[in-house]
Amino acid sequence: MIHPTAIIHPGAQLGSNVTIGAYSLVGEHVVIGDGSRIGPHVVIEGRTTIGRDNEIFQFCSIGAQPQDKKYDEEPTRLEIGDRNTIREFCSFNVGTSQDAHVTRIGNDNWIMAYVHVAHDCQVGNNTIFANNATLAGHVHVGDWAILGGFTGVHQFVRVGAHSFCGVGTVLLQDLPPCVTVSGNPAAPHGINSEGLRRRGFSAEGIAAIKRAYRLLYRSGLRLEEAREQIAALAAEHAEVQPFADFISESGRGLVR
Image (tube, rainbow, N blue to C red):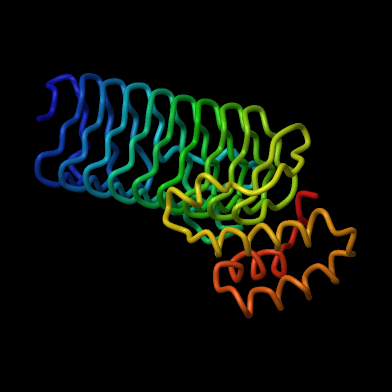
């Protein structure tokens, strides 16, 4: 299952049924789980752990040093979960000592060509990153979030679960869960109703999230007033609680 032109360091750990394509390079501290398929001309280096049944297409750079001038060869890591599809020319970097020392990508993510995930990013499960989506350092992306093509996310920004970014979006501030945005800079355009329906949210729950959205974006309330009313709404509708928690914990300010 390993092409004769691939170079695998003796210290690398490969699970069963792993495929390594032609001219790929796997470094000393790399661990690749069962059933994962690595295409040709892929470089996997650093302290990188890749889970089960991933597919990494050709010309990807996985586990390289971060693009951070403060990095000084610290033994930081990259962790990739299970069943991810990672298309051509993606680049994922290890973490830094300025954060959690690790960049993480969860399970069942669909990551298209030319996506960059920088140091210390934390990506959840079931996300979709379209072509050329780019995360700067320290970005957190929640489960089921969708980033349209050429989306750019500023460092330290948080992207909420079930949110949706249109093509060419530039995110400079935190994006609450379930909200749809587009533009440069990003502007809100309602909630991701269709995505919520597909994931089994009830009509009542979606209606409650819409009410929370209107309180934040359409009511004319000051942010603190909106937070208080959304917290009260969350006490009645559990689906609103992630929205309420997110806006109460935002550190960079919210897309508004």
